[in-house]
Image (cartoon, rainbow, N blue to C red; front, side):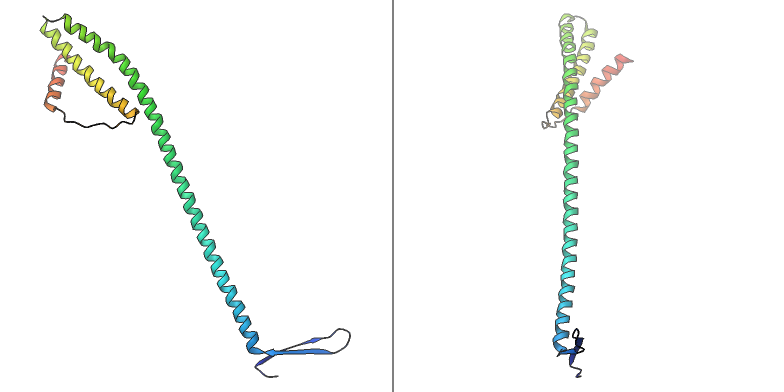
Length: 167
């Protein structure tokens, strides 16, 4: 046989004869190479697609996890806001009669300088409490707070009076 050809002998049933088929070697090798290349590239493409799908699935799960965390954080903040609003309203309800009582005492004790000074100090503290309640309510309603300058010397002077009376 020629080395450039490939032959295949197979027996014919019940005859004792053999059939010998010969094909050019180049035809067999070329088709085998093409088939191997198709399998190789098909495998590479399949592997690439599988890796792409894994990456897309991982990204999707990560995105969903981030969304769930954001929802939980929003729920926590909303619960904190509701609780803060409730406390601020209760505190405001307690503070209103205190301020009203201090105002009545201020009107009735016009001659007593020491009593007026004590009442004024208590009224300043009550006003600071009212400002705190206002900030708590703003947080509960998610309003924006406007920062402003604070007279530090005046604030410290008010604390000095309070501390002197306490001591």
